[in-house]
Image (tube, rainbow, N blue to C red; front, side):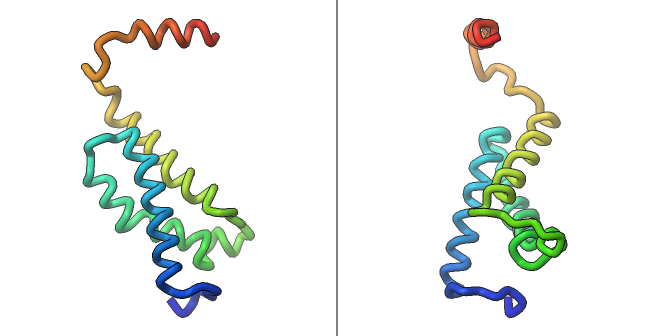
Length: 110
């Protein structure tokens, strides 16, 4: 990790990154509940690579991307996979007894 110019200790850096990866997984888990293999893949492979693109001097960093407090990286890495997984997996059939309350609320909001 000598290529990263850290102004904090390596332990604090790992703690910081651990908190961010937990935030990413919590966003995705809402869409793909009870599917732990996806969370493991995200933690082990996807997050470290994409995080490096922005924070570690990767290609997005070199293009001038700045991420303030993880807002872009965390929400993009949580939101886009959650959307893709929800589209592939589909709705949770039988999870809710009736769709009537949702239809009434959405009709009222329109």
